[in-house]
Length: 163
Image (cartoon, rainbow, N blue to C red; front, top):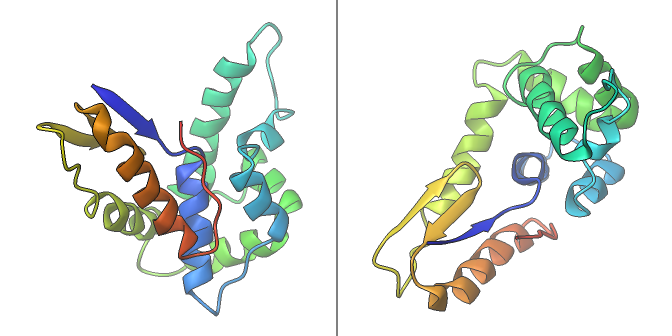
């Protein structure tokens, strides 16, 4: 099997969602950090234990961000406070979303499903998605899938990186 992973997928989907909604705003540095693959690294200084590798800490930061920003909006958490400090306009939009009946996670999952449900590899007999990656069994589909992902984000004027 081969796979294509979208770097910073959920944070980029948030940019897409906020771009679609005129009443919501985001910080340009938020978008740039997501596009440049540096979003999670901006939070490295929060309670980092000694003797932990960057790879391990990145995974932990990701979990913390999902818990306090993307899947729940916990204003009291250190990571949420840091997010507000780094990206005040984006934070304000997230605060508005947090008081509605539809969760941010649901909104982002809908965008993600719009993307992945429209990618159908031409040559692969087997394919599936897992989190923010698509797996397929024929390398001839790689270029087509990468282009479809890039075109999807291009519609929102977002530069995306895949690996």
